[in-house]
Length: 270
Image (cartoon, rainbow, N blue to C red; front, side, top):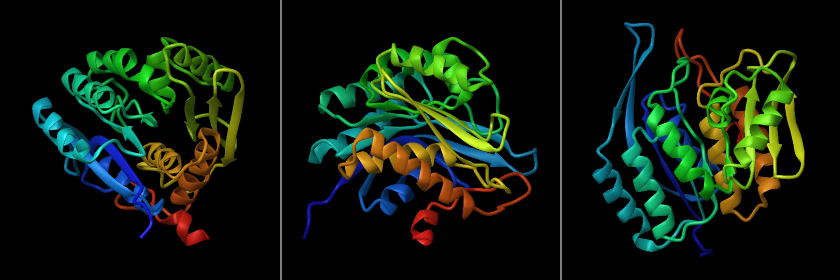
């Protein structure tokens, strides 16, 4: 039997299955890796109240116990973070990464639930910026998160994305992907990849209907899977773009509020 490739997600639960820890584990399996998890938050969505999100952080001590379990077999080949929920959980995550000499760390700096436009916990956002970005081989903010981390505020252009990537790289992350996706105008879904020297524009035609719930989590998880399997950062990011595009193309309408990506889309199209 060949060596098992191990991946880890430290993230929240999305009961609809499109995003969060569910998206990460399904993506890890599509990459042929063995997924570990540490649950940080439980998110529920209320269909009787416009799909309003309720967020319930897990006690940081319980997150620490989960991570002790996860790392009992040594470090992962790669790992990612998602919704962390509190400053204490961010600190527990930092300690686990440093204490276990974990490399190939992908930070997806989740600050809001889909459809929301306010930072869930500003103190946590600051802690992610200060404590986790310097540990990241890749950080994958969307436009809102890039605006918060860079201090630029609202970003609405490719040049703004490039400037945000430059500023975020200056905070310690070795590589930055600013996810524009369908949020920018035009016919292309655009992301910007910055390695500290060069910018690469990653773009695909926008997909309609856009079943893109969970696309951001899935993208970061796909980068994690690629790194775990030995791809370079550039290769992992490029494949992740293709992977998530296929997931959107094969997504479906769950209800009138949300259309999740289908994480097996890339495999189905091969």
